[in-house]
Image 1: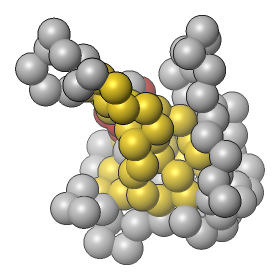
Image 2 (image 1 turned 60 degrees about the horizontal axis):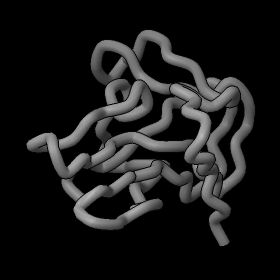
Image 3 (image 1 turned 30 degrees about the vertical axis):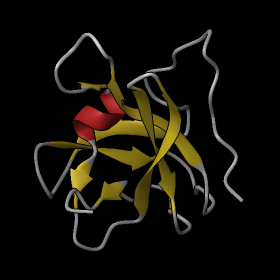
Length: 106
C-alpha cells in the first residue's frame, strides 16, 4: 500500500531522497540520492488549478524524464472541485544514482 507524502501546509519542492542532475536521456533529470523502496510517494509533479488553463509543474514535474521502461507512475493524490494534484510513486525499488522515470504516454 502506498502512503501519500502530503502536507497541505508545507510545500517541499523536492523530497530529501532525490536530486536534480545532468541526464543521459534529456537535459536534466531527477535521481535517487539513496535507495528508494517500491511504492514510495515522491511528491507532487503537476497541479491543476480551476483558474488556470492547464497545469502547473513542480520541480519534480519539470525535471522528471520520459522512458518506455519507467520505474514510477502518477497517481491522483487530491481531487476536488476541478483542483487536482498528481503525485509520482515508485513501482519498483530504485537504486542510488538511478534516474526517476515516467512513461508520459500512460
